[in-house]
Amino acid sequence: MEIHSAHLGATRAGPLTVWVSLLGVRRIEFGALPRDHRNEPREQWPTRLADAVAQLEEYFAKARRSFDLELDWLDSLTDFQRDVYRRLLEIDYGHVVSYGQVARDVGKPDMARAVGQAVGANPIPIVVPCHRVVASDGGLTGFGGGLSAKVALLKLEGIDVNGASPSSKVHPEVIPLDL
Image (cartoon, rainbow, N blue to C red; front, side, top):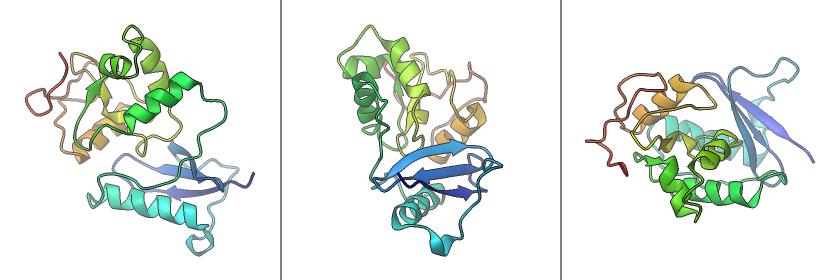
C-alpha cells in the first residue's frame, strides 16, 4: 500500500507528521519528521494528504471545529478500540469527557482503564480528539504527544487548564464534567 506523509513544522501543539494511504488518514505523529523520511513538495501531495493538511491548518487557525476526512483505521484495531474511537469522534469541539464516561458510553462501564489504554494508542490524534478525554476529577493524566501538546489543543478550543502536569485540571466551571 502506498503511504504519503507531510510535515507541519509549526502548530500550536508542536511539529506534526501526517501519514495517509489511498484509503485515508492513517496516522498523525507528534514531533520532528523521522530522519529517514523526506517531505514531498506540497504540489506533489496526493489529494488525501493535501486535504488532511489543509483541514489541520484550518483547525489550528481556529477556522475549523470538526474534520471531514476519510480515516484508514489499521487492521490491527480491536472492536473495543474502534468503539472508543467512534465515541471520541462524537466529542464536540471545546468539550471534554472522562475516561469513565467513555467507558459507560461504549457499554463497558467497568473498563475506564482500558479506555485509557485505547485512547493512548489512538493513531490519529487531533482528528480523533483524544485530547478531549480527561480524568473524572478533571485531571489531564497523559497524552501521546506530551501534556504540553494536550494543553495547547485544549486551550486552542477555549478550555481553561491550570498547568501542564498530569495533575493539572481543566476548570469544571467552564466545561461540565461527570464528577
